Image (cartoon, rainbow over all chains, first blue to last red; front, side):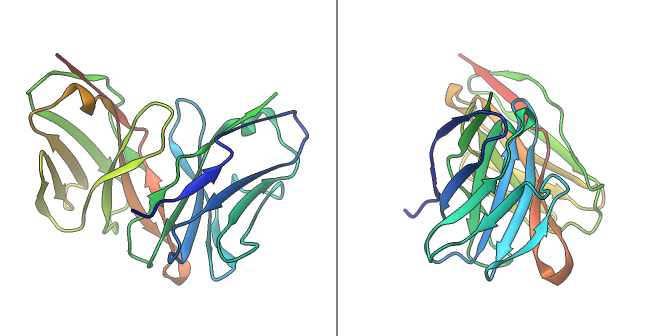
Length: 113
Length: 114
């Protein structure tokens, strides 16, 4: 069964460093998302992406964040200068159509020291 | 601010019992509702979706939706220790252009004891 994959599973970085989190959505899906979950808190929407552009972003998704679909398979989230409060699980999700179910990847645990 | 509310729990039930999980939402225009299960340190895993008022059954799981009361519930029959997890209620929120995103509740932690 097709699934969303994410790499790395765990990323440790120093405050101020740039990180890139990678996702491979399900191959025929058209809509892509990033969510994050700080330990013990809700899953929060960050950004949605369709047709090679951002369709919506939350107030969390400030200028330090960017997303890209560099080729036909990968979907990346970049954090330019990480802060301690960026430590969280980051989940990628994808879906086929506008009203379809979102399928989540296994997540990347980001630890900022 | 559109909200989804759940009791954090833990909800503790004996093995074999029915677990009842509840969720309320604030956006009266919401049309699509989801229950996800999340094990500690793992990603949300879809259990059920429901779009119409009433009940929807899938195996041991029944989702119930009451749009007038803005209330969604999940019943788990014959609860097993492997059902012990956090159950997330999620609602689709639409924005301009027809695009949408999921709004999650904080989750209810379920503990099924032998």
